[in-house]
Length: 532
Image (cartoon, rainbow, N blue to C red; front, side, top):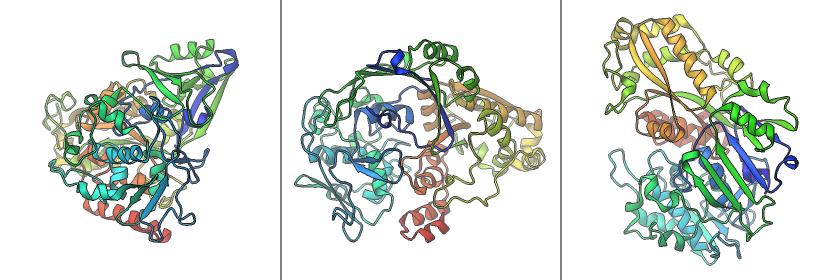
């Protein structure tokens, strides 16, 4: 197994991993320790977080994939060729893509891969469309809409049209888009995981018909057999997932269509306590220590014999998010639920002066220098440096107590300054970097006005994500790792009303939606640059 298949991370902030000399431990076993982040689901149509995907991408495989460390060059996987106009697998009008399906590939249960399996998997990925999930990544280019439901929950998907757009012609999977879509192959390189149709149906999953797809739309993760059962074509298959101790064990798939993995087993285990992680990496009982969430431990790991630091960059943004319309039911994060000095109303962050006051209260420079050890940069807008549309001249927010006070004095007609507020802000358990970001924000807000009261709270990863989806947290911090290497992925995720974060914030801006859609539909790079 190559490292590329174990950990694929395309992020811009620096990540630091510490690896133990494998020769000193068990050469057939690879143990990775993570400081936090329990798996949400093993269903490739439901999961949309890096912790879950780390396991999924070793169990399931896409039709095509990124070549080596490149974020531009692609290579065949379950398809035998990467479609292009030159090889005739992309039509001249840029709408029709043909993926020849590889023959002789076995799933973990021994069944042979077919074109119908690929077709079913693509369709299932789209019809699953759980709230704030990944389905929009394929729905938008294939269905022509990023959603299957309107904001009120009414079905808007034309399923008959969707079926016609994903077909099998002999052994070729043919996908016909309603209009050209530049990033399509980049999306397919990450989100075209294939599972066996017959196996899924035999365990109560969607039967592939128009009559039943809505029963499998936006369901709870635990209701699916694929939540904790797997059957892919990848180099590893699921042996055991111990949810209570945050440990998953993968075993080598002996009938893998390429060269079988050299490792017999891979164990990925979440351990919140740093000293325990350090002890295991020091003793050689772990091979990889993922310290992406706390660079403050770096000095304690650098001089351990046989342990090497692996520091590299990856394509990722990190941000605080405000929720514009909070769910008040049993919500302890808003306290009184009123703007009376002992809580906040559910629409507290709809006031732009509140948001700007928070933005000027954060010490960005100190966070990057002291917490991230200068291994990151302050992004201008939501598009990372080096991508089309990055705006280096955009003036960012900076810590400014006077400006923060000015905005807070105007917020809610002066009531915020007069009465104060009380709220909770959140980070995921064991994520020290996010915890410290929350502490910086709390300290500065309470310095601006003693009537401002902030509680910093932590939640385990799965609960944290669930609360973000359910509008329970007034302020929370999350990041966005590139799903595919195109500015649309970031612009859509951060700005479009159907994107991941606006959905979690209940944020709708029609002007932003229009610009994002225009930029994505534009094929001229210069025009795209202007729109972004």
